Image (tube, rainbow, N blue to C red; front, top):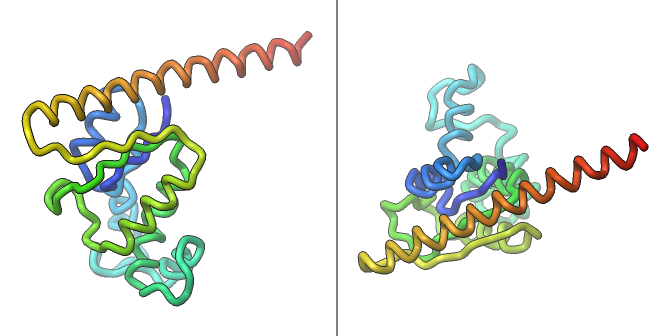
Amino acid sequence: MVKVAVYPPNSLILADLVERKGHTPLALQKQIRQKIKDPEIDSPPMNITEEDPIKGLKYAAIEVPSGVRGRMSIIGPIIDEAEAAIIVDNAPFGFGCVGCARTNELSIFCLRKKDIPTLEVTYPTSRDETMDMVNKINSFLDNLNELDSDNADNADNTDNEDNE
């Protein structure tokens, strides 16, 4: 099972496709859920802790607006944890936009910079393009299954060699 970052990070459609293929979607909903259940926050999901913008400094400079740093304190760990990524370019607001263009640019930059398998597709505008996008995503996820199996086999072989 591979941990796949989806972008836009709150796209339920992408998260569902990833989950159906047996992988773990790294999506914003799970991160926000942890925040809401945190007893330290008085009025979730409106408030953040004092540490959140500080955590965001790992991903964005001090000159970056605090809203971007606050968002990156949530999205950054998703990027760090990702073993693969699916990015949908030009997605409309309703598909799963974070609502902040600078956060989107920074997050996509960080995902692209990371040395992981990445699939980038353009948001479809027709039925045929939609089917093509879903097929590309499914093929990508199937290939991840093969890579994950190969890595597990290599780990088993390494363990066996150590035991000899």
